[in-house]
Image (cartoon, rainbow, N blue to C red; front, side, top):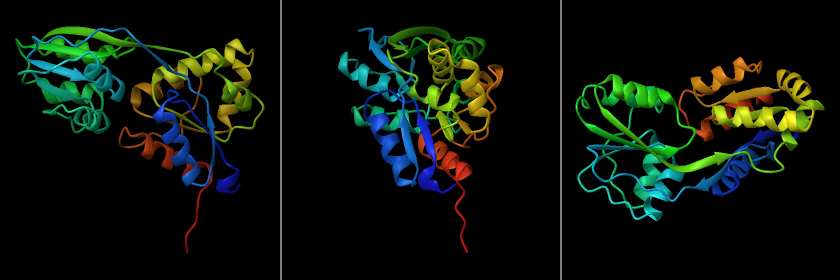
Length: 249
């Protein structure tokens, strides 16, 4: 198989993230199959302003914090990874803490010896990992969660599941446990869940992070690629290379 013939499903929300993903897949010489599995619905809530530490976990959260007029004041602003940190800076916020490991557990490890007795605000989606809240509470923090937005499966999602069921999907890039769950729900809605899972067994499946790997494997989806860093670019490059290796003299 040549790289050009390789079909790669991407599930990012239908905004610049999906457009960037499609552009990247094309630049790698593969054929993207854009099939958004997440749709953002804003709640209108804003992060609290009385916390010692405020954690944001996504680019969407950074943008919504600015839209609601949130100002950090004296709080220590924490980003779960470099992409979130870049988004916060792009919105005019200073970022004080970014963990070396871009995961909930990585952030807990970074903050564990600092937050005993502190008020910690976690501003994120309605599908955030409990690892973050539980870990901070275990470290002695008083944790409050604000749901900035809800993540739902878009109407009409599932083209990639049909392709997988037909054996016409070569690779897939899952960026969260919820994208895995929504892919399977979309396949179920189209009556091809078992066939889609079988099709993924013959494809290259890439995921961001161990929690996403665990979700996929619990649902019977074998995982082939987990990038060292939780970044979509690294995921996509690893998946395309695995699906259609390029060889150099």
